[in-house]
Image (cartoon, rainbow, N blue to C red):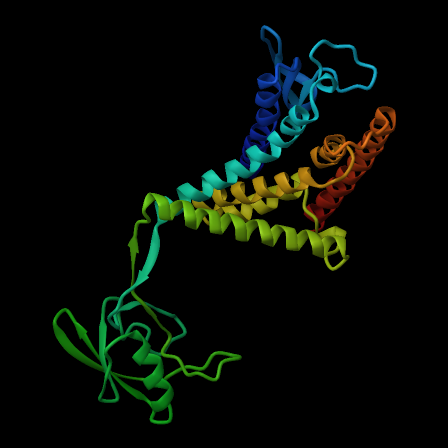
Amino acid sequence: MNVLITIIILGIIIFIHELGHFMAAKFFKMPVSEFSIGMGPKLYSYEGIETTYSVRAIPVGGFVNIEGMEVDSEVEDGFNTKSPFSRFIVLFAGVFMNFSLALVIIYFMVVSTGKMIQSEEAVIGGIMETSNAYELILEGDRIFEINDREIVDWDDISTIIKEEAGETPLKIEVIRDGEEKSFLVEPIYEPGRDQPLLGILPEYSVEKYGIIESFKVAGGVFKDLFIQIISGLKLLVTGRVKADDITGPVGMIKVVGEASKGGASLLVWLTALLSVNIGIFNLLPFPALDGGRIVFVVLELIGVTVNKKLEERLHMAGMIVLIGLILFITMNDVFNLISN
């Protein structure tokens, strides 16, 4: 099941990425000979008017074969015959779609979950199992006094517990179903914290975001996610993260398995996370990647002429390096799965 879920998640992300290239190429009237999901031998294909749509045997990767990307190509309206601006849009469209997919997912998660609002009153929303109040104080109880000192709101609890910690056990008085109840509870101390705790959590209510507020919150979450991924990439480049820690498609099976334990919402969040990751990776200025090709198009836009044959050789070399990297990561994933 984890294998199937992994294939579906990666398939959606890759499909969205390639769809971006495909739609942009069609918009600028570039001929597209094939739109493929997966690599290797064809499992299924459909011959459209101008494009063959196919599914291939290896469920990793995909491509849009835009005609005219070769140096010596003479295809009418081919990729290299178009303006640098048109080529830039086509190359960037895949990354744009990955980012858009992630933003849409985050937006709908924000809309569906809403924001958590802490109760203004000192109402119990949960009790830690390690708490000495566990099974004494119940969810929904409202604390109104600790050691005969009045509790007005939640912040009063931590203040009074800190001041009264020497007088243990603490006398906790609550209102439950309209009745007053009293309990003697010994505070607990967690490692690394000087502040004594009762081990209780506040009550929260859920409030839906408005349409505009949802966009703002989703944008903020996307921004934070983007920055975190960039920071992780910097750690990898600087050697602070080992290459062995990189996870590829095979290793994703384990990641998906762990995420599936948290339910469908966590798998949806993982899809958004991976979509941003793949978008950023494709945007890297490395030959053969979208970002590497964009670099040469930008140079044209600013008037710098680059030998097309040299560019093609660089992209070919980059592709060889990428294939080697994929093989290394895949072997590392397989080794980790076997050893674990």
